[in-house]
Length: 271
Image (cartoon, rainbow, N blue to C red; front, side, top):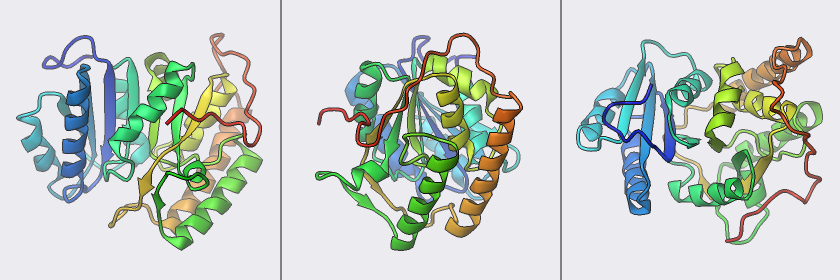
């Protein structure tokens, strides 16, 4: 249901899942609101608090009291990033819907790159650190061990589940409203594997996915624990494949024929 204090016709919904982000979320929220106000399009920012035990709620509420476009959704306990994103996307009313990490690892200005891909016909546009790291003019700052493990993880994913996607886990993804409603209507993974589930279902249902290089930088105090969470995500990937085999993600008739891009033929927006 649309909120009462935002325009009925929202162009953009921006969803930020947040767990104990009191020390990091405020600068990113300010950057988002400044950027979106400069664009001059009606928007909403939905911060979904995933049972934080710090002052995240009060930090967001204080800023929201002066910025009506910011709304806070609260969960009584922590369920996981996937659950928080799903709740925000299902509450969103924008014609274009983006979810982003609350720490601001991907600058909100990168939204323009994803938007160009959707304007050109993509149903889903996903940020990619892997593609950006191979191109001049982009900055990807991360820890060396995380780069190695992430590369191994993405290699396993490409061989077992998802075709033609080099970076499934970048927390910066844009959806057309109808596509978001379809994908999040069947998603069930509450943990970090929710990205895999969304992209798996999108491919199964024939949606056009554009992978777009974006600038990205590691933020201190990340909630993602590489070894523990990579293993958990691999277990979730097995569950996703099992769900697919059992027909849980059976496609409605709206899906189109999907032909994954060959290596080196992924879409890039003009800079």
